[in-house]
Image (tube, rainbow, N blue to C red):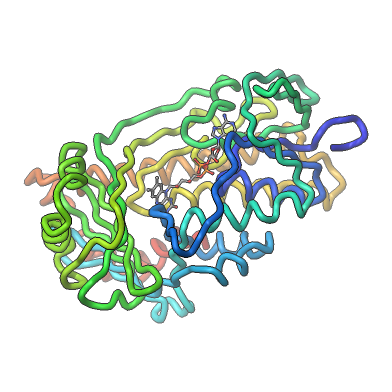
Length: 392
Ligand SMILES: Cc1cc2nc3c(=O)[nH]c(=O)nc-3n(C[C@H](O)[C@H](O)[C@H](O)COP(=O)(O)OP(=O)(O)OC[C@H]3O[C@@H](n4cnc5c(N)ncnc54)[C@H](O)[C@@H]3O)c2cc1C
């Protein structure tokens, strides 16, 4: 807190996005506080998190700059070097390989709980003031600052407030920002599986009429599945016994890794799109799921959120290098406009792909035809698709 008794920035929400943003701002020399409802549980190698991310290279660079990536990588990450995407209705596959793109790897598969744990271990060490457990119940703001009222009776004054409190963001609502919502009527079923064939560091995604099935390579020869399914189908597959589930999963995967066998409990989460109508209201900025909840088919949820953080940190560092105010209205507005544009394009693109592929209507099947194969055969297009996913 500075001499006038206020912070430069208060971050609400200590998930991957909020914790990374708080650390980055503290490293840039700002006085930062972070408000979180519940302290995350410590990650343990014997209790793996079912939520895993296909982590893009640009975001590993961000965590490296925050001095967190080496801690994550030392504990448990699985690089992936190949990716194969194909349509159950036929046509050629779209394939990427690190060798062909002259890169050591395409990205990493990382557990959510491990990322949060490594980020949290740095917060207080690097000067972030953590208020936990606490939640925001009110805000007031004017041209010079924002005041957050907390449910523990406290108040925090800051020059900016970052809403990183997830899809149901309370701060977004308090700031008066509406969202465009769409329920996909699908659940994402997640679990770890063992496979008859080695995964060979390959991520697979097969489009099926009910929704895409992704198989992400993990350490110890396991893979993590994210299977998007219509709600009734997902519920049925949560309840059937393991041998029946294994048979259906192997069939759905086209046996790309031979027979698959459950190696963990199953969990399911609802899939919906939520896009904030703006990423800024005065001195409140929205980042991560507070601004955009996307379909998990492209594995880009956390990647998009960390790109909000990177763009913001670039703006803060640029302002400080030039001796200007990091919170000038024009800077906040430029950041919000650029990020909302990128996030809107990505969110709607994932939705369009899900809609085009998650059905077996003859016309849609015919129209999408051999699109993946065509994209795969045109090197410039394939390279552009990859660069976009990798954040390069
Ligand atoms: C099963 C599953 C699989 C996924 N797979 C992928 C993938 O492969 N790749 C990918 O990129 N993305 C994936 N996603 C999406 C990804 O999890 C989210 O995009 C990401 O977690 C968003 O991070 P966040 O920090 O914005 O929000 P969250 O992770 O939701 O964190 C929000 C934080 O705010 C706190 N909070 C909430 N309300 C308040 C409040 N009022 N006051 C204070 N604190 C509050 C919460 O306790 C939490 O700590 C997946 C999601 C799920 C559920």
